[in-house]
Image (cartoon, rainbow, N blue to C red):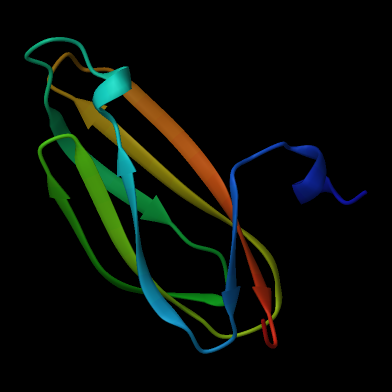
Length: 97
């Protein structure tokens, strides 16, 4: 078992060259009246970033895959209550599905 598999993170599969958006709903982690004031997505080599956005409790990042393998995509936010929250997911990139 490799390190990425051992982490137990949510996992999605994409095909090399595919481009799509991934969103996170932060509402379960936010308190009443708490807002997201900043959102930063971290993408490893092998995943090309596109536009990112934030609306209400949702943060979104467009990505394009450029090589096969397992890649960790991380979203860090700061809130109006000065809390910093970080969540990650694994994108498994394959040649074909």
